[in-house]
Each structure stands twice: as structure tokens, then as C-alpha cells.
Image 1 (cartoon, rainbow, N blue to C red):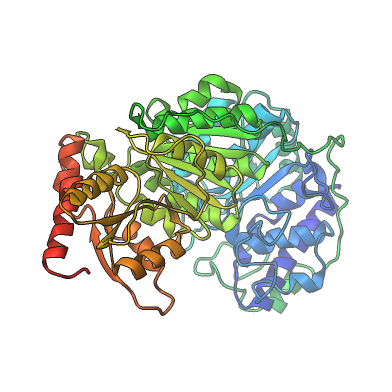
Image 2 (cartoon, rainbow, N blue to C red):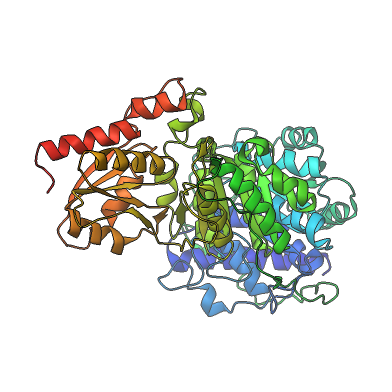
Length: 617
């Protein structure tokens, strides 16, 4: 498009943003209006995209990181002919695809859910990594950011990652409109303040008037021709551009314009321009998921040498990577501890070192998943809490990612509470449609690693630092949503429910109690979510009392997962919870378990007390 046509298209995008927000009675039209010229030039002259084939492997990828400006995104889709005017005006209405903040669950042209600011660029880095290192494709990743979100540390984690990887297929377009939600941003219109920061992370920067369409066009051309560096285009814009009484005014964020009809008139009225978007080059076939032989998982002899589940995780992941070339692994610079290093040594081309930047690690996994890969990202369980908002938003996106948290619980020993994941089960159980697994031995871990590759949504696997007995044989099956009854008789006085490191402790306690004539049932509840309701209900019916034992805080962990099996209106059995209730210090793993009251001796003592008090049958 020429200059005049680009100006007209920018005005159309403003008008349609105003109209959509007015129809909804809510939204962010002023934030949309500031970036309208940036989007007009991108759509008409630089984006290569087949809207009829959003999965085309040659398509450029676009992310609106400032997701509250969704009226602008939907107006762009209308200008591209992907939406009609009637649907545009369903914005934010019940049942509409046009949500207040865009999600790929609703629209095929949306790469990732945005709206929690500071996440679009990190996910864009993951997509750009896929294009450059895995697909070796020539598509470009365009990310529109707001200036307010550049206060988020996750943006600079992404900037450093992109600079380190020399992602010259990535362009960040920063809409520097000076105003945030409650007032001016930290740096206002000081473009150089932002440029200095990007340049510090080895980015090429371009400063531009964000309402000069010719200057924008040249900036995009320069970004495309820049090699060896990602590019940040810093565009000075005005919030509410083009409407008197609204332009560059505070107090209008997140509100429809006071007089939409007058605003539309000032912008030149409604238009119906349709852009012929450039088509992507070539027509390569989509990468298919391999269908080779089954995974040759590592095997451990039942009753053999104790093995840490983190070791089993690493070896099983490497084996899975050998069987399937769509498996990728990421780690937060602790691969020698999580054992992701086993994958890195065997499949270095599909391994991504994210260093100590857990937000970026999870975001990169989301970006890789958006391109069809099956990512496994690992760190200490405790440190995944830093990335929790990214996990939450990954669920909103419907992303399929695997997360592995090692060094969980007090069982890690002397390192102390800063390293102990004691909240992770609660964290991941709360995520919509998540799967939460806590294996107790090597063979179980290996099987579950393979199982998670075929699941949807967020999958979390909790692993342990220390070696644990090999309880199961290598051919044992562990279906998701299942459990294993390890001790059972017709004389059971109660049921002990354990997972992970507390399973061998529960078995040792059961053996000691059996010698005293007290029989107890033991359940290995390796699938914490979904939980095996049928087995738990049967145990409650048979024994009347359930004792849960977990290396986790009592809130939200194994005990709550068991309780959920009885929240359908049926009688709730007596439930006793043994969990980590104090703030641990430094001690040996054995001392830690005992101090928390979750070792074999403590379990046996609790059972004896219940029996003596005649609380159980």
C-alpha cells in the first residue's frame, strides 16, 4: 500500500476499535488507537500470512503482547477478511470468539493468550527459537508490546535470551504511548531510555514516530534486513490518537470513548478496506509427528539398587527423545541436578539452556508448543513458583507443556527451606485441567515421563533428590488417574495414602505394624490429579479412616487431593493428615522426615495412637 492508503487503513483500525468497544460498553480503545498505524503498515506491507491456513508452516507469527488492545487485533482480522463486521461488534459478548483479551482457544490466528503483561515477548522468543534452531524456516516473529509492560522483569529475561541466541527473526514493536493505566509510565516518551536497555542485551534498535507510516515502513524493512540480532522498534505514539479530548489524556484507560459517534466522525467515519495480505513463501508440508517404534525406556530391577527419581526422569526423557523427534527439553541452568543433562548430551540440537530465568523457560516452552513441539522444562520444584503466572497463562492458551520439579520437599536435606518445594502440588493442582504426578521409584517415573508426552494441557511431574527403593518392576503400567494398592488385607484397620518419598516410609511402617498385629492398607497415589476416586472410596468403605502422608505443606497437596474424592455428597471418612507443618531448617534427609512427622516411625506412631483411641475399627 502507498502512504495515503496506509493512513486510511490506520484510521479504519481506529474507528473499528472504537466501534467494538462502544458495542461492548467496555474495552481499551485508546490503547488500540495508539498502535493502529504500526499495525496498518505491518498488515499491509510486511506480514506474510495465509489467514485461510493459520497452520501454514511459512506464516509469519504475530503476538499482541499488550493483549488489552484486543479491539485493534480484531479490527486487523476484519481488515484481512478473516472476520466480518457483524462479528466484530460481538466483542466481549457471551459466546463470542472475540474475548476481552485474545486466546488461541477461540481464534486460530492467535498464537498465545496475552493480557498478563510481560508475556508476549518471552513466548515470542520461544517461537523464534523454533523457527531458527529447529524448523530452520524463514518466517518472522512480530511482537507488539506496550511501554508499561517493559517494567516487567520477564521482558528483560526474554530480551537477554533473544540477544544471546541472536534471534534475527524476532522483531519487538514497542508502542511507547507514554500512558499506563493510572498515569504516565516510568520513562514517558524517552525512547532512548528503552533503546539503551535493549542495546545492552545485544538488540538492534530503531526509534521512530509511530504515526508516520512511511517511517514505520522503513523501520520494518530495516528490521527484516538486520542479521545476527533481534530488532526492537521503539515507536513514539499517542494514546487515543486522532480524537480531540481523548488524545494523550489520562484517565481513559480501559474505557469506551465518552462519545463514540463524535470520535468516529473525527476519524473520518466507518470504512471497509480489505487488505490483500502477502502470502507466505513456499508450501512446505507441515512437520508430522513421528510414528516410529515404541520408546525403549530405561529399566531397573525390582528390589535392586535404590535410584533417585530425578535420575530416572533424565534417562527416560533422553530415551523419549530418541524415539520421537518432536520432543524438546529446556532447563533453568540446573540440568546436572534435574538430570535434564542426559537429554542435552544425547540430543543437543533439541535442548535449550534457559539459565536461571524460570519465567523465560516456561514461556519458551509455550512458544515451542505453539509450533507443534512437545516440551519438557525442568528446574527445582521450589523455583517454578517464580514462573507460576506463565503456567497459569499457558493453561489459558491451552498450551501442552510438561514441567518437572526436582528436589521437592524436606527430603532434600541440608540445603534448607529456600530450596524445598513444599507448595508445588497445590500450585499445579490449582491450574485448570492440569495433570499432577508424583512417582516414588525409577520405573514408575520412567513410565510416567512417557505417558505425559501424549497428554493435553499442563503436566507436572515431581521428582526427588535422594535415592529411593525400586518398588515396581519395569513392565508395570501406571495409567494417569490411577494408583497402586501395595498392602491390603481383610483385616486392615485403616489406610495409609502416600506418594513419592513417603511411599517407602509408609511400607516400612506397615511392615512394623504388621509385626505387632496391626494391619493397614497402603496406597501409592502417584496420580495426584486426576485422583483415583474409586480406589480411595473403596479404601474408605473397607477401613473407615484414611491417613495421608506427604512431603508437602498440608494446604493443597496430597491430603486435599484425597479429600476431593469425597466431595460429591457421600459421607466423608475420617481423614488424618501427616504433612510438613513447620518451617524446616538444615538437617539430614532422615532427620527432616522425622522432624516433619512423615517418616516410617512417625507414621507407625500415628497409627498406633489412632488404634489405641479406638478411632479406627
